[in-house]
Length: 280
Image 1: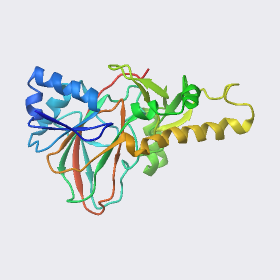
Image 2: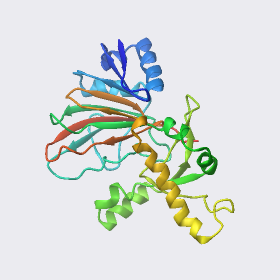
Image 3: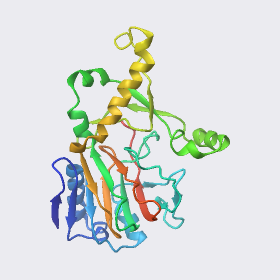
Image 4: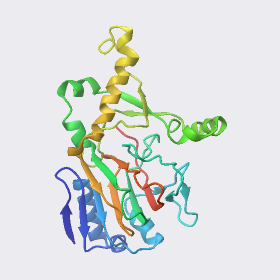
């Protein structure tokens, strides 16, 4: 197996390995897991595998979960279809970590390209450990101990009817997570806010709010500043898809952005999502 780092911050492409073999080989799996913790996102080319192979590989990292909005493959629970047609209904072209609106967000995912345009449709991944590490020290002090609410309503629910949106929220109520979470395996500090973050829940303290103007405007400006850190190129890697390419990423320490520059061409992907633990 050959390991080719793609940037100084994040991402490596692995050659000479099939993820179907990784699913059956404990030693090989241990190597892949160590590389994932180091590089945060791993890429594999020419993976001519079955859906069963895809699911078996993802299950080595933990149990899988379905999505309340995306279509699942009936015979393979935990495997969802991400199909983009000539309709302009893209939701993924924003920096985000998957399903932070869950009380226990996913710890990882395995995404496979079934078909894609010849040009366009790249995906960007971001190292949010680096994003936290390079924050100004006064900002680190300010956000230590802060928590933020996360919700699904204002993203996936945006195009739903009122009744559908209310039902979505009933099944997926707002949750709160630390603004700076800790990686459960490496102990690293991670900046953990994004487009699912709606507001801070413990910002209104004497240290942060002297006047009313400091409250909601001040909190919103700080939250937007933190969310903007994912867009810094020095923390990023960009991957060009081809059929049978696969990406495996650590959803705890990264965000990603699916570049929607290929409309009206179609693209078909399949993703297995790995259950995670409650952030701390």
